[in-house]
Image 1: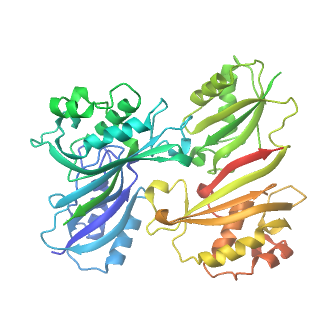
Image 2 (image 1 turned 60 degrees about the vertical axis):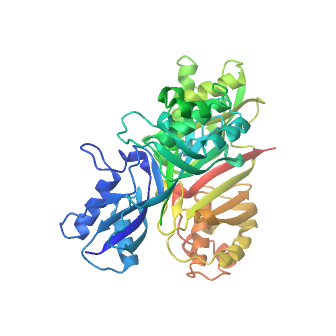
Image 3 (image 1 turned 90 degrees about the vertical axis):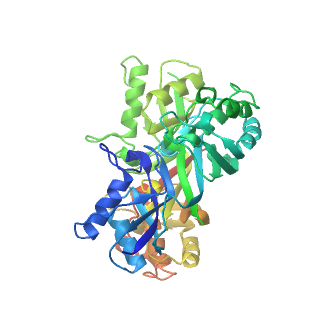
Length: 248
Length: 248
């Protein structure tokens, strides 16, 4: 059966995350519902590159699924895009190798985190940026974020509840941009993989440093400690975007 | 009684426009409710620079009201901002002259209209941009928009139902920017006043020209005709922003 790879975007606001669960509306749910109808009542299992949490947005989530027909790709994309609800967009559909796997073959992911630092909060962005109304020293955060780059054991930056044993990950690139006209900070992280809530804990830690409640050199000892309690709080989900997923 | 001038922003999605009406939630309603509570149960009438329609957003709407106390302006702003619902922000509060009037003394208004031209529509912007999936020749629209600048009788660009007699307005500046990375067009109009749905009809006309269903020189004869039916359709409200209101 042909295997398809699709790139999708979604507004996470009204989803209980990507992955199907007992209760609550999920992105996987909606995709499978649409494919079920296109496939005349036969289930099509959708596999994503990874979960996103409740409220987290995606601009470039990747999924794969097997579908028993070779269709015009643009017609297939259009059918999926228009038949899924308006908070999901299907940006691209392509035929993939039979052994393509959206989750296991990921080489790189890019996340962004958007922080509204305006006073007051921009009401038009309240579902698409997190909000921090207190003072932030961006220069300190720019220094500290360098400590996150490289290969580290990110145990202290992983929410409890994760069952993954190996918590070593590599961050290739991490930066903070100040969109001046927008009174907004955009954090970007590109790495080979991210643990449960890792991006939001890294952002929460950088904010705590920027606000002067952690020293600028706080991050290396937090790595060594492997202690979640020494890192900053988990930043809110509405600021987080899965931007891009790359494969070999 | 001291007169205050305030600059507010709001997400128009869940409002039936700015102005109080018999049915439906409005921005004026919410502002007056908050001021009623601050003022210990006495009504405070809020006057805006003009109405905005159902679904239209504002980044810089201006209002005035009389309030029987001289307060610290930042405390007053903060109280109003935090006590109004999250889809309204109070950006600035200042003391105004006794004869300041938010509506009658307007010298200039700036509106923007945001159009998502991506395929597919960006689901994260679906409440904050209008969507046009068909072909658009931006160069033609850039030529035609010049015809809107200047002093004209805008009768053909005014929705029926308006009771205003004098339909001559002056547009000082009009432009279209293409945010390339965003697959978005931003129309900006700065003028001494705008008729009922005028911005949305101008945008609808420019889109029709860009799509080749009206000629590039369509606008001058539409002015002469004063016939609403010759102009383009009214573009959707979710793309429209009241950006700035200026006074002498």
